[in-house]
Amino acid sequence: MTLPTPNPTHAPVLVTGGTGTLGRHVVPLLRAAGRAVRVLTRNPRPAADGVEYLAGDLLVEGGTGVDAALAGVEVVLHLAGDAKNDEATTRHLVAAARRAGVKHLVYISVIGADRVPLGYFRAKYAAEQAVVGSGVPCTVLRAAQFHDLTLRTAAAMAKLPVVPKLGGIRWEPVDSRDVAERLVELALAAPAGLVPDLAGPAVRTLGDLTRDHLLAAGKRRPMLPLRAPGKVGRCYREGANLARPGADRGTRSWEAFLAETFPAGAAGRLGIS
Image 1 (tube, one colour):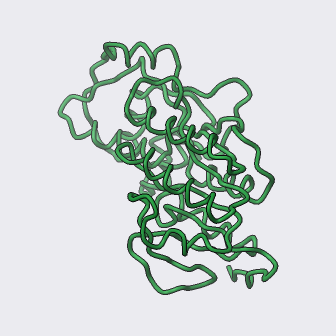
Image 2: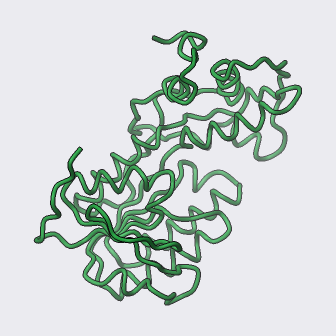
């Protein structure tokens, strides 16, 4: 695909996390829409195909390179983050966005951020609050776990001699490409605040997702049904991590993702065409 020349009437779009799982899909979509893109990264590289890679440090308030990366930018997609530093880096980005006069800050969060008592979810919710309370016009999208994360989780469990089948834990994994498409739509539209959740097309137990991974990979392991204990287990059994009514749904299924990931006969083993 030949990407269009960036429209000189459009300010560049800044993407944090532009080289990650989600960013690798978002950046080409922005370019396909004719937008010049800046990627804030720890490891800069030469500009190419309408994309600049600029070094910046969000771990420190006023960190090196952040203000320069935001100069002349009107739209920011904040895709970078981790459970340990997400709140701090988001607050630092928000402060810099205010200084730069950014007109639209788009943040990717997780479904259940305000309901699941785990550190990752709490950090995402705190970051959401930093964005919403910043005074910068914003859009917040909560998405379900990506297929990529689901695969890593299932693969780790599949290494055990006996695989736990956690039937009480339900996920609705979504393809990162579906999330990227939605984020770009939102970024190029007016700020909308907290928008409907985006989840995958089906709700599945973690045990079934793990079983599908074993089938796709052509592995055999005994599975032992287990009940997730404690407050977190109860929270998952009550569906606190699942999309709220009115959620949007991605179109790419977990089974189709596995068939792409394990092309040698996986589709047949999963019973899909």
